Image (cartoon, rainbow, N blue to C red; front, side, top):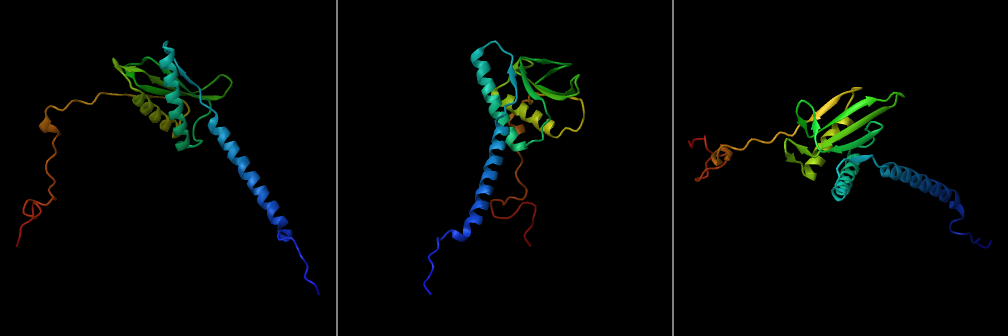
Length: 185
């Protein structure tokens, strides 16, 4: 009986269809994830200098994107960021956030950042640090409405250089190879 010549993929058409549908589903899911990440959170910087405003908005959006990637979808709906020169309460704050509910029942979260605290102009890195603290706080928040302050207190200066020098490690080997506090028998 003569051998039949069959196409090498003749028996695998079902397998190819399954592979195709799996790839299409994975690509659709990846596209939805990309679109979700591309949705930018509103960032408003309230300063008159257009160049500085745009630079701050760009840096804060970059930081928000990185924070969103690290924390996932655990943020409250209606989140926005407002940057202003100074935040006044009983003392000046580097930032705070407010969780609340609108009249229509929808919830919102507002992160507020200050550009200046007690005469100290915050650098972009300091603003990003305050933003990160607030973002983490919001991602883990369980309460319905609260104001959480983020305070930047200057570190006290050391009294002298000697105050910053640490004492020697008691377990470090001494000059003769013995460990301090042990005695040779």
